[in-house]
Length: 459
Image 1 (cartoon, rainbow, N blue to C red):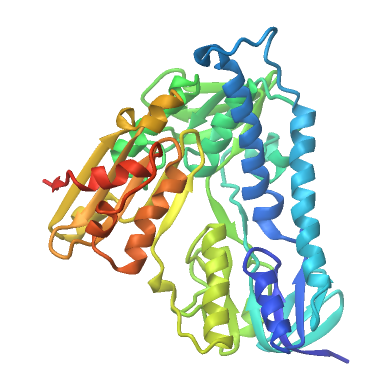
Image 2 (cartoon, one colour; image 1 turned 180 degrees about the vertical axis):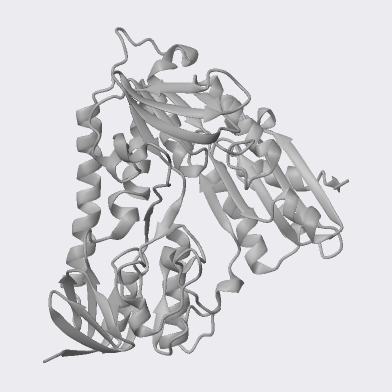
């Protein structure tokens, strides 16, 4: 005997709960299923806990710099890691509990805890019970990638998820992976007091960014005492009496780095391998991401895929926007598409990187006649007041249409100020709209009109 629903949502990450609630409020009998942690990655071992830890690390960093601001702190600055973790856990619990209560208190929504697997295009089995739904929404997220690296099966290692259980200070944290997750943990644990070494196969950190951004970020991290090893090829790991050794073929010596703990931060993979997607006929690509169209419909009518598992974004904000797109098309008669959104994200080191639109490399590849504006953060009053003058701001503009093509803000409050560019781009307005707008002094955003007032041809 099966249970019949109008809609079934698999996964409680950022897209799942709001969609289930919208469906329930629209009068549709809805089941939402979670096999592990309610709230998904962001709530439990992603955005919320890591940014909470980053806040604790920044507090330690600012305390150590007290004398720079005329603040005298008697005694050594010490980080109590169990208390840091306890604070993080309390904030995570609050978020997790809030999402759980929201789902349980919504009419027409049933929260089921268990592992759902497809048995057909309209049915899934969970906890031995068969559920049937007219519409099914897949929101299963992703997990840390564990590479096929020689020796890895014989050594202990951490991922972004297991790092959430750490309540001690690693003596020397070696991080394999020099991209967004790895760099955030690198600075965080350096500020907590660990020695940190970042090992990256590419010739530079966060290689998807423009070279000047990558070089500046490396300088920021090295200025805080983080060691960076690039072009580290043919990596292997081995156990040592004092920890874990990472061996590599690279240009620099030494060819072996021994750390007390190893963190893998080499990307993420979708949680699609154990869903029975083949039984439903849902197509995936070579990497396991579910193939979707511009409105997030899969290859099977009546099945949608949202969030990290569809390969159309790997952020909380893209997952939530997936929900908005599906809900608008399904419930509001408001045709929205994935291709309408503008790429935007941040790297939450300190100072942060805020990004939107095209990089310089992409602008050049487009063949567009473009203008560029650049300003060092040393010119920004807010940065000087805080003695946080590392970084720069850069924007690219289409010379013919006057539309903003993209921007990088690497500096204090860059993750907030980037939205000024993003909003003008989304409105389809010319850059002069922002250039002629009066901003509040003293802020980072007040310099954006000045930046746009000094554009030069991109040569």
